[in-house]
Length: 325
Image (tube, rainbow, N blue to C red; front, side, top):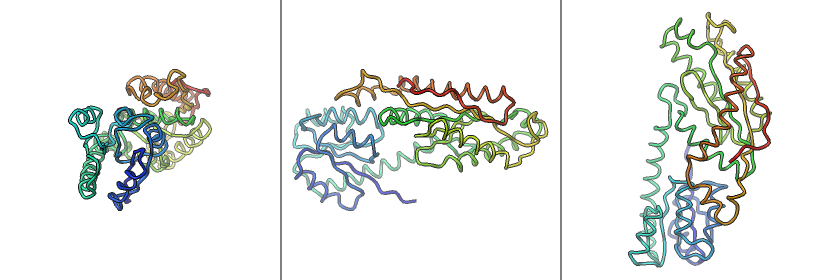
């Protein structure tokens, strides 16, 4: 599948935007913002692959905007395009996280060439990130990729006041399966279950990951308890339909799974409201991940309840109207 790259031009001068649009025509989808705050709002709703950024803007200057972008979206390259030509501003831009610095008035062939180079580098880096976030055995996402995506979706759900659903899934009595059938068959069982999960949780924003051992997690952006619970029931049925023999299971003569379901809308911290909300909320991924642990713990408690109730079933955690963000 071929995807079109998306380039964001941020400048308060319409003539400068027009010049860049002409220079970059055909390189990808071009979108524009006339200020830093508008650019950050646009990126929150729709991702981009590269940002061209003016330094001198009235509402939020380019340096503050770049700093916020790199905190919230560290992998997106930012190129400054500005009339500032001195070393002090160029160094300041690079320290803010920019990958390049272009002087105005622009030379269209040079700008086009530089943007092309950074788009290619970004694509290669994206491939490396995808490989580093993939579980070698099953081919789905690994725990590292899940943690990263949880932070991104948590922030997005908090901004958009949307629910975030999570399924924790465990293959029932998998140790007995491995002990009886051997690790080669055990690995094949893990791959088959992973394929079922990936086939069923396939919306944009869904993420299926191997959490560890025989445990999986499914992140469901925009899913409330009812929707996440419905999908969990379908997953249970689909795994049963595989009819993978498991003679030593205490549940059924074939492989089954237990699933815990949790969902909630991340609550907005009132201390983060206002003009600096984006940069403050992006200050560090670690605190956000700590708050995400609340959702993980709720799904894990529901999974434990499903096991205690006899396995091969779905247990939905008590609903929460909001979870701390």
